[in-house]
Image 1 (tube, rainbow, N blue to C red):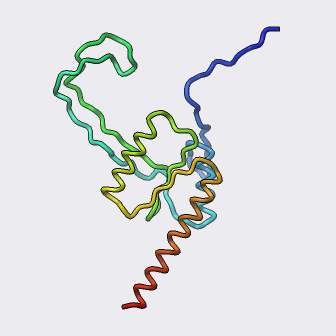
Image 2: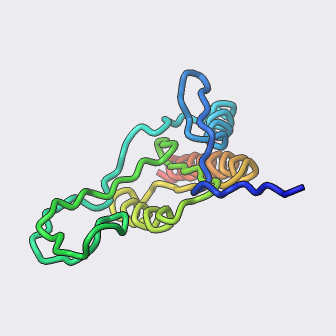
Image 3: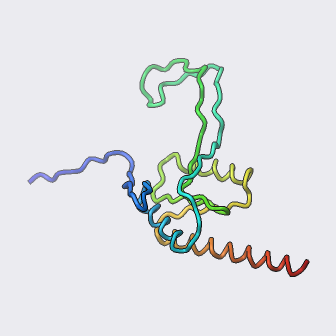
Length: 161
């Protein structure tokens, strides 16, 4: 009997899950949402999109094929270049969480750009990138510890005044 092989069909796609009326992009995001809720840590799900690089008009000469690698090799200059945007999964008052089980090939570059944007515009924000449920649990512990330390430092400042 001939053995049948399954043909690979592109990148891994996470299963979309609806919970509490919110449509999450993956089960890991649902797990993080439940963990935040249980710990009573306030965070919004995908509330805002950050523009990491503004769009611009390219006026020069640029020889290339179409973006998908097909077509003729010709001048494709004088185009509007779209901005690079990033929308993290959870945003709290002092932290941002990006749940990423399996990253696609463009994610590492986008993540570096986002970290650069945060360093320049919001240096007090803590970033977390859990990749599994254990990491999500550790993220909750780190946020609680971070907030406890902030409260302790604030009390020390008040008593010293």
